[in-house]
Length: 538
Image (cartoon, rainbow, N blue to C red):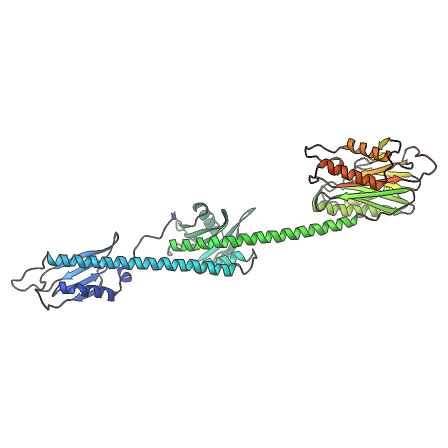
C-alpha cells in the first residue's frame, strides 16, 4: 500500500508536559480541594504528578473521589483524579457541585496546557524540518557541485540520502535508453533479484513524479518497507532514489518522504546537468575527431596535381558530412597521368576508413606496366581480402598518355563523359562490377583518343543525384548539356569544374547535400598523329 502521511498517534502526556509543570498546575488548583489529593495519570494508570492539599481553612473534602479523562483533540492522553480524605462521623461526602466544578476547571486548564504544548512541539518540529530541508539544500549544493562526473554523482546522492533518512539499504536508479540502470547501491547487490523486484514494485506503486512510502507483505529476505523519491529535472522524471528497511522496522514517516523528495528534486537537477555536460563534452570530442578526420581525408586528395604535356587536369571533392566515401586521385606514372574517381557504397566513418584503404590499394596496384583493367583486378582482389561485409567501392580509372590517348576501366562506377570540341558527347561504359564484391572478378579496359579541346569528365553520383527543394534530381541530362556547352566554348578544366559546382549549388538551393560530390576533368591540349582517332577495345 502507499502511505500518504505519518502514522497516526499522539505523543505521550509525559513528553508534552513535564512533571514539574504538571505539579505547578495542580498546586495552583489545590486550594480548591482542601484535604484532598490531586493526581495526573497516564492511560496505563501510572501517576505522573501528584499534589496533596492540607486543610488550612474551609471545610475539608471528605469521602469519595472524582476522576475524569484528559483529552488532546480526539485522543485521550491521561486522566485527572481527585481523592478526598477520610469521611469523619457525621460528615458529608465529596460535594458534587463545588468539587466537580473545580475539577472541571482544572481539567480544562490541563487540556489547554496540553494543546499549547502540542502546538509548540508541532511548530518546533516544522521549524526543525524546514531547517533540515534548508541545511540539506545547502549541503547538497556543496557536495554535488564539487564535480560534474555523472559516474560519481549517484553515489554522492545516495550518501546524502542515507545521512538524512536512516535505512538498511538504498539505491539510485537512472533511466537509460535501454532501460533503468542501478547507478549506485548501498547495503545490497545492484543485481539482487529481490532488490530489483522491490525497485520495480516501488516504481509501479508510486504516482508519477511523487514520493511514496510503501509497506509490502513481509517475505523472507525481502525489504518490506520502502521509500521512493523520483529524480526530476523540470517536468521530466529520469530515475529515483529507493530506501529500504526490513519488515518489522520503524515505518518511514511523512517527514522522511518530504526530505527525500527535496533531495530528489535538487539532486535530479545536478545529475541531469552532469549527464548533459557529459553528453556535450562527448559531442564536442566527437565533433573534434570528425573535424580532424575531415582534415586528414581532405589531405588525401591531392591539391597540387601532377602535370604532363598535353593535359589540363582539375578536380574537386566535397563530403556531404564531416567525412565521406568519395575520393579522387591523380598520379604520374612515367610519361602518363593516372586519374581515379571512386565512391564507397556507404556513409560516415566506416565509409571514410574504407575510402582511405581503397585509395591506397588502387595506388599500390598501379604501375608503368599495368593497364587500367589489371589495376582494378589487382585492387579488387586486395579489397576483397580486407573488406568487411557490405563495404564496396565503385571506381573509374583512366590512364592519360601524351598526345590524347586514353585507356580506362570502370568498376561499377557512373559512366564517365567524353565531350568533344565539335559538340558531340560520349559515355564510357562499365568494364566490370564494383570492387570488393567478388575476389575472382576480372576487369576489362577500353581505349580512345582525344583531340585538342576534347575533355574527359569523371564524377560520382552525388552530382547527378543532388536534389532540389522540390525533390527533383539534378540528373545526367542536365550535366551532359552543361558539359557539352562548356567544352564547345573551350572552357579549361578548372573552369569546367567550377561552373558545374556552381550550377549544382544553385539547383539544390542551399540545402544540405545528401551525398558526397566529386568531379575530375581532363582536357586534351596537344594533338598527336592528328585527330582524335577511333575508339578501341582492350
